[in-house]
Image (cartoon, rainbow, N blue to C red; front, side, top):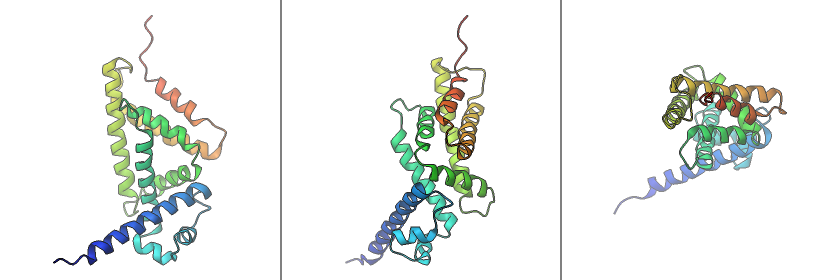
Length: 197
């Protein structure tokens, strides 16, 4: 007969972590990065701040996990039927109008996590690498299909589209009337092959 206590404890801890992440995602989405606090997140799940930090190494670590959760949800929600990740990125840009708090969190975390010691450093690095690979492959497929110009390296084009997406988010934080989707789609259109004369 085996002792089931550790698995139950771990399952309970995992469930509590998921509950905290869901609450943090909701609070930040509704109130924004600057207007939400660790105390509000703790209150939403009936814990103290110390109780929340029992499940996460730091506030920054919690925020990095919130973005990881957001990315997982976005990937599920915006997965295109044809597998074209450029379309997924375009869908995410469109969706970001609805979640300004998460846009602000992401933009701040990218900047703050440049330090190797930051809890979000590895996550942001992995995220960029994965996104560059996936977007680059989508551009390569478009090139093979004749729907993207072939005089640009797919890896370079992927970095440019990701930079456009991130840059538009920064601009949008200053001017919420700006249409990020229109600007991003214009950047994607620049990858189309020139019309035959």
